Length: 637
Image: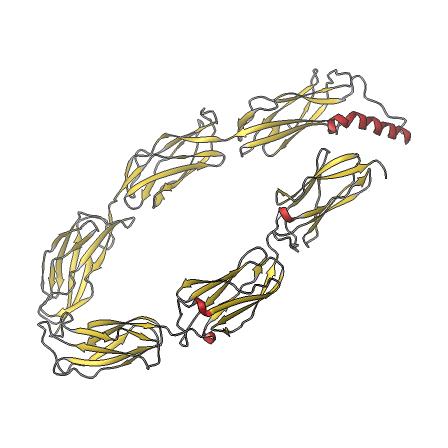
């Protein structure tokens, strides 16, 4: 529309100028620039970051269509990339050319050609950029060992969108694991040589056995994914005790748990089939089955370790038949003790096995029977009870009677499973488990956390139910009520049981202000209720943002005001967003925007044109509601 109206508008403007005393005006005539037009180069498709195949060419002519030489043409790249040169002089045929270099992202790119004497007459080009790609010319080896360099190493070639090699040097290509767990070792970033080829030299995968694929990526290039690499177990790298360390047993008897060693590779994967030799190192004694082999779990277990006949320390050395294994050999310790109660034959029991949390009103009787290794009862043994967990109370038993039996009592204020251990002379002879369950929830011991809110975003109220001893109480959502008053009233909020005594209530405020959140347990307010939740505006929303776009008069300044709002229509009340205002179809159409710091933005325009113009307004790169707007500029009012 603007191109069709240009000549009549120019004529009117010239008449107005003459009427105002412009007697020295020289109209374009032969040999003077009157028009700039596209000759060739529009509508091309090229590769990102590369020059277009053909130059962009314009021609400058006078009012009679004759070419005008010696006119400076200024080129501008829009949307990214560059033009070379940025200015050019027309030749004898009135033509000027430049080379368009596309940007780094696929899509459309604009280019404009401007002659200073013809500011309203701009030649425009639109071209398209497509992505280049990475192609694997040598796939990584189909099989590899964890931690070992893959053979062969991957080699890639840069290609343009048509599949032709792209000879571009210095492009950085990075490799990562695309599928499967593990890590990469080696140099994971390589750069292309002068032919566009990228060669990796020392890539290795560390991880458990299984299939992996690799992905290769570079900025501006479509990624490449390798074929499958089947990863196997690596060389043995570490050895450690898996079972049977730090035991005690009567002198001359076997330890209760046969010592075992676990061998793993660098990724922590068990290594099977490795010989492990178990040999007595000190204290006397003997082993059977000392020559063991790691199983599918990487574990090698000695057949039997019998301690020496003297009281004291014993050690057993387990040596893995491999070099450079961290922790090799593994040394086990054990203590030979005098004739002692037998843990295998003694017993510990609890009755009842489940009690309520209390300060002693509800308890469990702990019965201990002490026997030797042959099952005979041991009288007059001092038994000590220990219990895990907090808030426990134990009544210690007296010495065992003739049947080897004695009884103590256990209670606790802390809910959960408590393990009660019975020991004789420091040696544990058995354990029993008592489960303590919480009581009913009480408001004074319960708590709620109410955060500040954001309009349009659910506010999540976290509630913790506890009994009188502070134990979390699960499964009691029906004891909680949450109601909201204030800016966003809600009579009842659903309660979500999140397990372990944790609950959540969620409501969605839409108005800015202060909510009062009332949280009750069993009808009684929890400490701090009601809670104040200040609801702030949400994130700026282009779809709810508005603008004042008035009409104007030729040569007189008019102001555009943008009002930024969140998704619920609340003014955001702060600055810092990216607001752009531009007038379509005029030179220097992008207007400076002033951030008022209160959620409003101001732009002014002093038009020296008249007619209807489109005003494009964006918020953070997205058009606001109603954009583009139309403003009418009259010659006078």
